[in-house]
Length: 355
Ligand SMILES: [Zn+2]
Image (cartoon, rainbow, N blue to C red):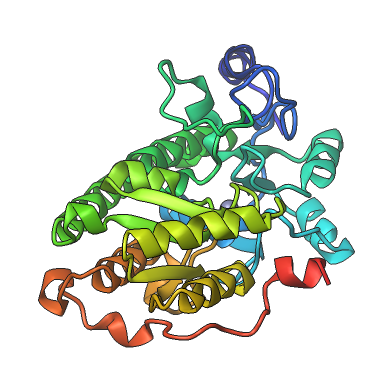
């Protein structure tokens, strides 16, 4: 391992700029302290990178290409990063990594301890949203609690910035790959912009008055800003917040009063709160359907079109547009057969945790 003068200077600058961790609000304690890789890779072969979620795994693959071998701790569409607690095996996988990459902004609510201990062991850790925390004016959305909303991947412009930040960090850790990382960041930015353009085109087919998205937890504020929707959720930005009966009643009233036809379940969150909305609307003779099962905090399973963030985002857009009135020719895809039309058994980690 060697630390070059240039790299040291860069580290000091980044530390000075970012201060601590990923949080952008000085009143809120950061998830972990500095996330900059201070040592360079000295191994041979692909860099063993362990990520927290599979959305991060996709980003690392897109930017790292064949220079990296990537795995994710929460590697599946049904895993809830807000409530997931790392197991001893997960901690072993993290400590065996050459490099660890996480999302940040308090998304991984139970990873503070393990990530902090990696720092003490000298294992470099990168927070992909670190670059966003430094922007002035910020593009991050703030919650009512004064913390930044972590679900930034639903704004393709923000997510391509995370790709650029990751490319810069990987270049610091593995200078031989700098050219590849920066080329990949450009290609990834093009992918995000073409996904955004396609999403805007599909959403244009949904009349403005129908652009109301009701979901299980508040993961879609960036999505709403990008695609000009109003979003309402039963739970807050973390699935660990507990919704009150009052919130359910409030949403039932909104759905009935505005004759909203569909609500949406999520891959990584229990259906129970959405079931309460359906039952509440039925009691008032308003027929409410499940418009689809959206990807919120995770992308799809390996080997599916939705294993990438771009694929998962387009899946969401098509499901939402179709349920709210777009035709098949508007959405231009034949993947509507995967629409969830009924509530699923409680299999999320959030549901298990609370049992
Ligand atoms: Zn979430």
